[in-house]
Length: 153
Image 1 (cartoon, rainbow, N blue to C red):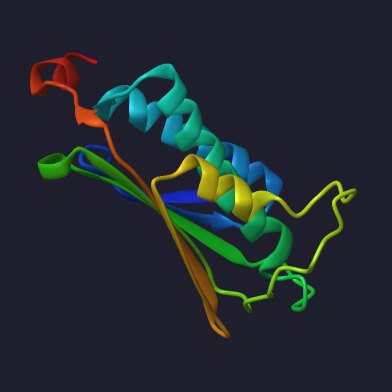
Image 2 (cartoon, rainbow, N blue to C red; image 1 turned 90 degrees about the vertical axis):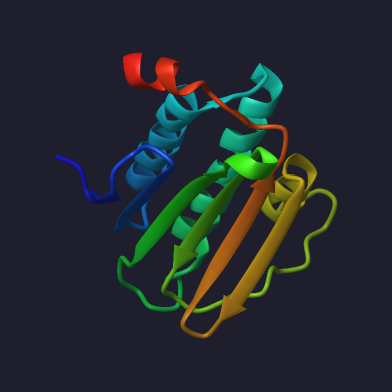
């Protein structure tokens, strides 16, 4: 049974909210993958960029947002396509407390999520506050599929 809810139908955008845990991260990543199939035309490399950066944002939320709370929190994702400039925007939000990234040594096995998101997306913004964090990822060169193909799919 799914721990997330669909807040808006798939089409121009995708919106979901669910538990901030690994199961929901995988579920949301799969939903974004399906949304890409239905909505936009991108190269395999660009698709991988979108999915990996999105996975990093979701995983950071599940791993860090509620660490100080001691309980399972929620996270939300919203994915939109701006047809006018062929841009996909992915926003991942949590309602926990912002935790500044720890400095890591070169030998550390973790702590590269933000670096990876910056390498994969055309633009990354992170708005960390006491009442939650919003990570926004922007990807260009994402053309909309012709309407006829989306209706058949």
